[in-house]
Image (cartoon, rainbow, N blue to C red; front, side):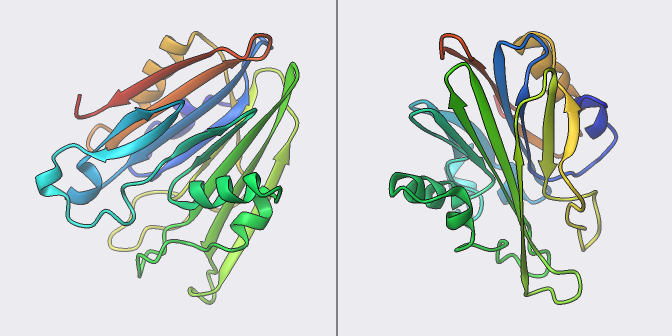
Length: 235
C-alpha cells in the first residue's frame, strides 16, 4: 500500500482527486482534495476558505472565461458530515442530506460533466463522524466506455482502518486530446505524518506544470477540532 503522494508521483495529469481515511495515530480522520488543469481557465484558480468549507475562486477575475465547471464549493460541512466533490454536486448532496435523503439519492440525479468530448467524471466523498469514530463513502459518475453519453454510477462505502484511506481521481493519466477516465475501485493509500509533512509531500508529488491547489484537513476524533492546510500555485 503506497501513500497518495507516491501513487501520484510521475502522473502528469490525474485531474482532480480526493482522499478520505484514518490517520495512523488512530486519532484523526483525514480529508484531502486537489485540482489540476491544462487550460488557462482551469489554471486561473485558487482555493479560498469559506466558513468551515472551501471555495474555488478565480486568481485573476479578468481572465475568467467560463465559471460553470471551475467555480464551485469543493468542501461543505453539515454538522458531523464533511462533503467533498469536484463540482457543484457538493450543493446537491448538501440539499439532499438536509432533507433527510442520502448521498446516493443525491448523486442519482447527477451525471458526468458536460465537457464533450472528455465527459469528466464527477467524484464525490462523504465523511460522517460517529462519536469517536467515522465512516466514509466515495462515488464516481462517469460516461460508459461503450456508449459515451450513458452515465455509470459507482458507490463505495468504508469503515475506517488504522493508517489507511482511499483515493479516487478523475483521469487515469494525461492524453491528447482525449483523457481516459479513472477506472476500477478507489486506490488504497497509507496516511501518516503531521499535517504539515503530509501536505508538503502531497503538494510536491503533483506535477509542477499542471497542479493548481491542494486542501488537507485533519479532524480530531476525540475533540472534533480541525487542522486545515491549503496550498495554492498562485499564492
